[in-house]
Image 1 (cartoon, rainbow over the protein chains, first blue to last red):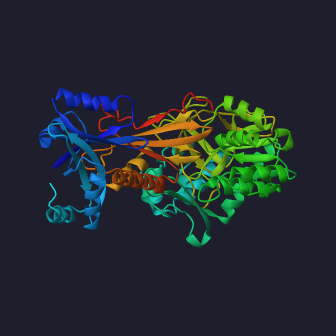
Image 2: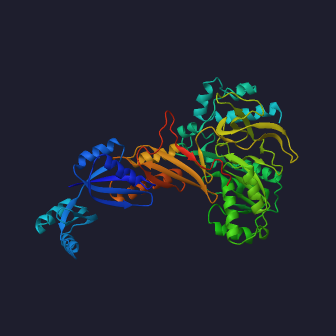
Image 3: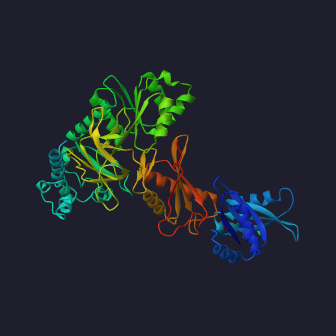
Length: 131
Length: 420
């Protein structure tokens, strides 16, 4: 799946501005993570039709990037995420970053993963029969 | 100096310049083939001006007027892009330079009994070596401490009994502050004269430095293309900077017309008696005015006012000349970045700071912080390599730097209006 990333300056109101813009574009954010440094941040979101949203954001002068990520269902119980992650690590997957969300409809825990090598991840997912 | 003596000196400089093929061609274009073609000041004023660009085209040694075996030293200063401007000195030039600086020191009441603490940088920059030569020529005890390492500067100043401090005015203030922090009172020091230059400063700054360091603060001016520090300096009267008789000053308006005495304009300098790099009608790009007269210190000749500004966009950061074009060059060399940038210059704790805001674009943006930080790091090291100063780099959103019609605003100098 494609994740949408937006570059944000670390200044008062910038995050709110970006979220207001997404609201204006009628975009529903399914998952969100914010990476920040002293001077700037990167807003990472999962939305429907990310390509379309990215185009609209670009028209509004946002710096946007679509990044391929993996979304995995994990058991919503203690150790659920750790179990999946351990298996992936054993298969040689290197995680660049990760964040979790819960799907309302079925109370299902899910994680968004950005990995260094997609081919290794694909092989691991196939082998472990992950969803 | 009489008009005839002056013309004789100018002819000698022209004679030197004609030894460089580039000048020979340039002067031939205005009908000057021999030194004897200069019979009046009007003849001299026909000579095309020399700019940094002329030095760049002849990088590194193309404008030297003496064979390389006669050149014993080079100095350099920032070019507008990439390569520095290089000048060469013969043994006689170094002797002349030392004498010029020593004469200024004498007019400032400095003698062989003084202990001269030289905290200007030593190196390609002319500041350190220039004052050093003058100090030794005078016979004073010379401390070549160079810039930086403030704690050691304080220790040496106190233990060696430094009486004359030479550095940039902002570093003098920084030293004053460091002294106070270290709990050393100015009475424990023997400082009595400060020779401050390489950056613009004000009378308010002079008052502050004098009060905090307990010395008489004097302004010194010079640039490598005409020799180095010592083109002019204040005497203890502080009624302007006396130009040494080995430099012929002209003040030009923006159309290149020579202005009469007292009118403000760009200072153009011709060195008299210099051999290695003659320096013929060199555009300093510094704004000032000049007047002719005598001073009680013994100086007779031209005196210039403090530099009031620049013709171009050159910045002086902690005494180092920096051109926005150098920073643009560095940004473009990193690749994937559009040249939308803003240079913010400020002064914190009496030290100049330079921060470069660079717009991130679709090409350079990655959603991994590590890669953004690497980009920032690449920009930083490239800018530092090219300018030779420490900077900060901040990535900002696209279109966040104001665009303007015509000439883009590249520099926000917050030091303006700040006294300290």
